[in-house]
View 1 (cartoon, one colour):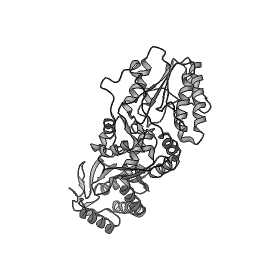
View 2 (view 1 turned 45 degrees about the vertical axis):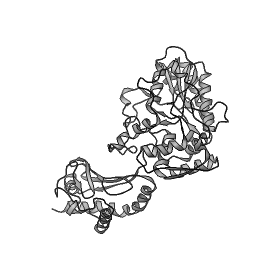
View 3 (view 1 turned 180 degrees about the vertical axis):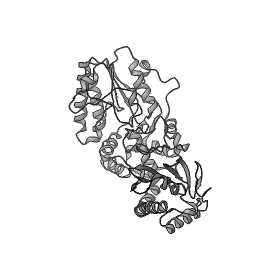
View 4 (view 1 turned 135 degrees about the horizontal axis):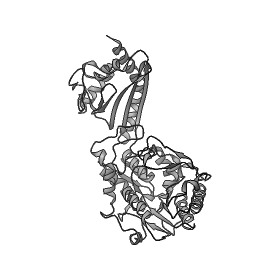
Length: 456
């Protein structure tokens, strides 16, 4: 095995022993599995290309062989819901094949089969989220009339953990679902309603067109084509539980399984409350703890985030010289670049019902959390180091402007970040329109801030 301390972004790294293994060749797998009681196999290769089906089968065989050699008591696997009699898509066929490889191995296996998992990082949920957030009218092939049984990530974790506690040697597949069944079209429309969007409409076309719709989904969402093509192809089948046999082995959670609406509300709870994660090192924040993107989630998880991130080095200025200018930004002091452009934007914001530039500041040289700064508001403040402003202008999305000053040698680094989470197509068009101007505004702003800091 090759122990690793893991990434500093993993909040749980100090609570586990980490082994890095290569599942493509199995190097280190037996050593990593030695002394392990239960293996959770939560690996898929769908995003790796057209031959992912072969890769997933080979990986499953290596895991099963390593588990047997290491004396593992049980394997727990998570696959997908599918009808037994259907001609399955490559994605569903691969999920089912992996489950069968593990079930046929000498190590007892529980193979869970779930539909859409409602939580950040779930490719099917992210597809629904991004489609609903982006499109008011969604043209869709007739597979959107197929039925699906979503399951909250909270309940998926419940089953995965409970499978560890079972004493008997259960070796079979179990369907797991919420018993709350909907058409795919209704899933997308209801997500929009729950998220507080304008009514979403799905135009059902009399065509299956899985490949064409997979390309379309890849174009209008951040998900890569390597995911959207097999994922959309898998939607050609119903994804509904066939029985409740799991209840005889693992009873439902004490407070019951969450329905679709509850699951989505939970996934959006903190966003609705305005609690935004300002650690933008990963992906968008503003999600609840049960569905918040983890640091190792893919970059298409959570809300779509656009950023303009620039750092300039000033060798002759200390943080103590730069900070008073940063803390005094806005109001009568202005924004240190293109004053006319800022005034025009402020007037427009006022016309459409926003705050504009009229609010100014509470004090000319001091800020505190909650203070207005023109059309911004101070969300976070670390004196001498960092200022985070949240936009209160009228715009189709949510925006922040962040200034961070760090000591660098005998001088300073000034980092400026514009952060924007669009709402629908209008939000994405807005960012496409304003982002070219950032190339001129932000470098000029940093240089003018430095000039102001040089003045006695």
